[in-house]
Length: 235
Image (cartoon, rainbow, N blue to C red; front, side):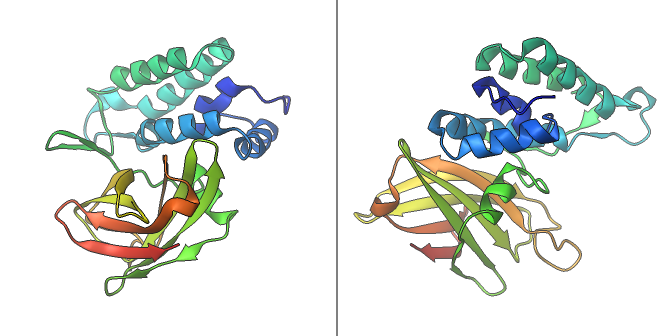
């Protein structure tokens, strides 16, 4: 085990496969590496969808499927630690395909694209949010949350905490510039049980990026795809 950091470790970090020393080293590396931070934002949805893989009840073929996927991904990381990012992503997709007929994945297809829950306890989004300085927002009745921002050479890295929402909903975090321009930072689905509510107390954590610099951003909005504004965060 070694705290040595390699750029290709971003996929293993997103999947939670790094050992503790490597995870801490790579977490520190993220704060100064725009390319790894952007790549991590792109991989988070896929990684957290796999983290939600569960056996389908009553189907004996799925016994041990989740453990087999994790073992497969660990072997993939060991074999391809120095491989290019594209190779790792193909490996993740292949692992998902292997269990697609025998497991239920926490994602839904709707309209013209795919949406999936991207909450993960103690995942990269939550870790980034908790080590930052949150800017609180004002929300619809019962809704609360905030964002943590990080200036990058390519723009702004943002992490959101959201509480007090029930689904089913499809939502987006939108950065609104001082000139009125709107950029979608990330999107997700809220299941019926919701986040940060009685019976489901854990908040939602998501993160993403925008080309706008923090100085160019007037506010962030959490909007549903049906046009309802859940939270406004002035920056």
